[in-house]
Length: 188
Image (cartoon, rainbow, N blue to C red; front, top):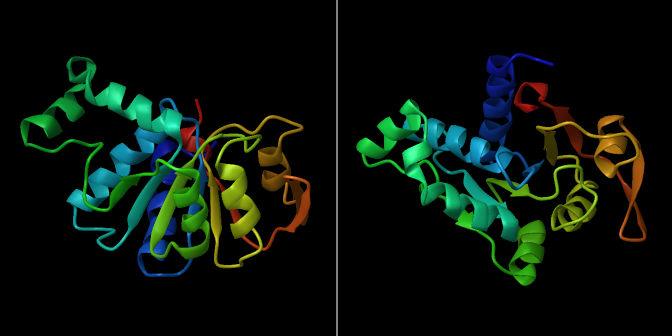
């Protein structure tokens, strides 16, 4: 694994490319923990004046509900997060952040999103809304797929990490022209 610091630096670089309009960043992420960790870091960068144009979409009903649970339990935040709250900064509510509620909106994102990162479940790409995004975005060379968690053998996520030139998604053979990035410093 890369260090956490190196993984954060690489993630910021990839998000900055999306902020400049150089393609979409797609992050298959687990709904509990990993999604909220990503939002926390993106909020911090936005507070530093970075990623000004970046739109952040959380496309997972479960991650949306779990993020609300985090927001409702601030007493268990660590000291850094409590400090943000004291300054009036909710790390899970910042300019450019949207929680996607419908399949229709999810499908629209795949076709129309610009200057964006889409964080979608499931983390190993076996099911969920991330599969629709992968089907539409993997053929685009400008797409960056960023894995922030372990990819078990036999999963679609592992095939992508192993640089398969094409993958089966929802019964269709999809060419992989997107760049694939693995940031092991986020992995538990």
